[in-house]
Length: 326
Image (cartoon, rainbow, N blue to C red):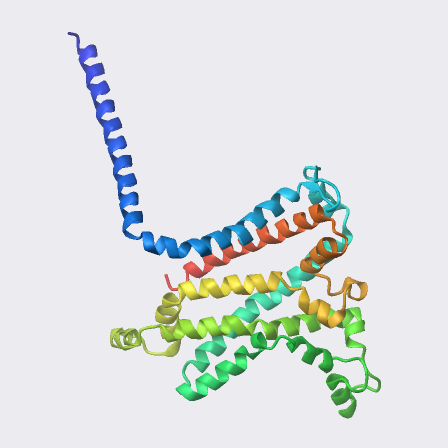
C-alpha cells in the first residue's frame, strides 16, 4: 500500500467522523429543543393566543402591504402587478409626497432627539424627588397621553381670532395689533405642529424612563462612591446609562414611532389637507390614498417606505445607545 493511498484513507476516515459528529450535534440540538419545549409546553400554550393575534394582525398585514405595494389595487378590481412603478411615481412624479417627506423629516429630526433628551432629563431629575411629590409630577407629565382631546387645547391657544390665548396675550402686551391666523398661515403651521408633538411625546417615554431609573440597584451607587465616583455626571455615565440600555432602546423605538407617525396632530390642528400642504406628513399622504382615494397599491407602497424607514432608524439608534457607557 502506497503512502498516497494511506493518506487518502486517513482523509476519508476523518471526513467520515466529522460528518458523524455533525449529525450527532444536530440530533443533540433537536433533542434539547424538544425537551425544552416539552418542559415548558404550558408556557408556550399560554403564549399561543398572543402569537396567533400577533401573526394575524401584525405580521400578515405587513406582508400583505409589502406585496400590494407592487400592484395597482383600487378595491373594486383584482390587484394587477405593476412592479416598482408605485415607488417610482412616489419619488419622481408626486411632489406632494416629497413635501410630506420633508415635513416628516423636519418633525422627526427636531422632536425625536429633543423629545428623547427632554424626557430623560426630566425623568432623571424627578426621580430624585420624594415619593409623593414624584408620583404627582409623574402623573402631570403623563397626562398628555391620557387625555385624548389634548390637541384641542392647542387649537384654542392658537385660534385665529381675538379669543385665542396666544393672540389675546400678544395683543394685551402690545406685541401685535391684529390677530394672527396661526393655523391658516403656512409659515406657522409646521412650527406649531413641532411644539405640540414635542409636548405630546413626553408621556410614554417619560413613564418608561422613570420605571427604568427606579429599577437600578441603589447599592451600585454606593459601591461606585467607594471606587472613586465623585459627582452625579460620573454616576450618570458609568452607572445609570449602562443599566438603562434596554429601557433607552425601548424609549427610542417609541420616540421614532411617534416622530415618523405624526398625522393626527396635523389634521386636528391645520385640517386635511393643511394650507399649501405646510403640515402634510407621510402619514397624511398614506391616509389620503388609503382612506379617501382607495388606491391601496399606492398607499401600501407609502406604508412600506414608512415601515422600512422606522426599522433603519431604530437600528442606527440601537447601535448608538449600545455604545453608551461601554
